[in-house]
Image 1 (cartoon, helix red, strand yellow):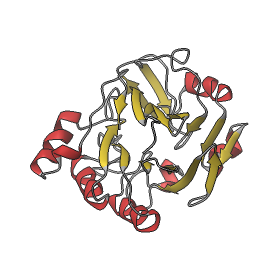
Image 2: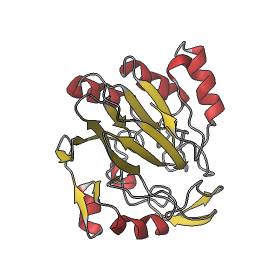
Image 3: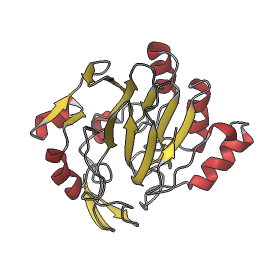
Length: 252
C-alpha cells in the first residue's frame, strides 16, 4: 500500500465521505434538518440532522448517488450540493432527471484520476420491487495499490452481493446500507439489509471489513446498529465490523 489514506467519515444516514486514492467521494448527499418528508405517497420522518453541513464537508471530487427518488438518499440540500461536486455518478434514470448527473449502466466503469468506479446491481426491496422502489445502483472502487471498496447503496439482496463478488473478485472494504428500512410497502420484506441478511452479505464478501451506514436517523429504520453488532458477534464475525461515529474519520 502507498501512504495514501483510505478513510470514511459518516455524515449521517447514507451520507459519508470516502477519502480514497487521493480523491474525495461522497455517498448519497443528505443534509436537511429533521422533519417530515413526502416520498411516493408516503411520509418519511427524519429524526436527526447531519454531523456536517454541506459547507463543512470540504471539496468533493465525486458523488456516488445510489438513486435520486427518495429523500432519505437525496434531499433538497443534497440536490443543491450536486453542482458543486466534480462528478456525480448514478443510475441512467437519475441522469435523465437531474442535469449534470452521469448515468452508469450496471457493470459500466468510469475512471476518475486513478480510481475506477464500477456500477454494480442493487435491489431496493424484495424481488420485483423495482416497479415501486425504482432503480438503484451500488458502486465498486478500485485503484492501484489501494483496497477494493464496495458501496452497496439501498440493496436488500445478499444474493446480489454474492453475484458482485463472483464478478468483481475479492473486496477489501464493504460499506453496507443496513438498518432494515421498512415503510410497509412490501409487508415484512425490508428495503435494505437487516442484521441477518447483512451477515449473509458479510459471509459472501469473504474477509472484507464491513462498515454499516444508513442505519440511523430515520423512523423507517426498524433495527438498531446495536442489533447489527450483536448479530455479527453471534455469527463470529464481530472482528470484521467497523461501526463509524458520525463526524469522526474512520481509517480503513
